[in-house]
Length: 177
Image (tube, rainbow, N blue to C red; front, top):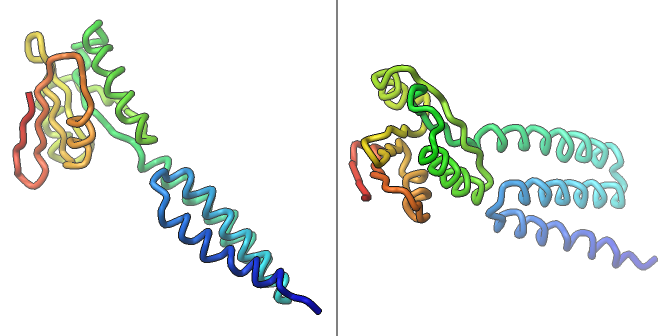
């Protein structure tokens, strides 16, 4: 009996694994992980291990993908602290639109967390409850990021409004006007 199709199915495993490792978009990686599990389940079934194939299909593919999707979705959020009294005036609305555009490009969400007092806002940043703060200083805004990666993300994108961008990670203060 000619069993060359087994080799073709087996060759798909390393191919999909390489594609999975090279993915930048986490949602595309989830889809490819599902394909990898389906190929593995098919190979197990063809090789005569239906119990292993069923386990791989149910646990290795369906359950794992569901859990990964929940984890990716919840971890891809940039929490930005703002003062409630500043409201959503025109320039702050423009700034939030620009920040949403920046984070959406990277398959993330921007979540605004309102605080009543500026001291509360700074304490939340220090306690790592939020990733950054946004305060109005006259006609411009001051954005302080706690994480270097988020700082670099905002720094590389043009924002039409006057902002001062600072990063506080590892006690290294970097500033951009």
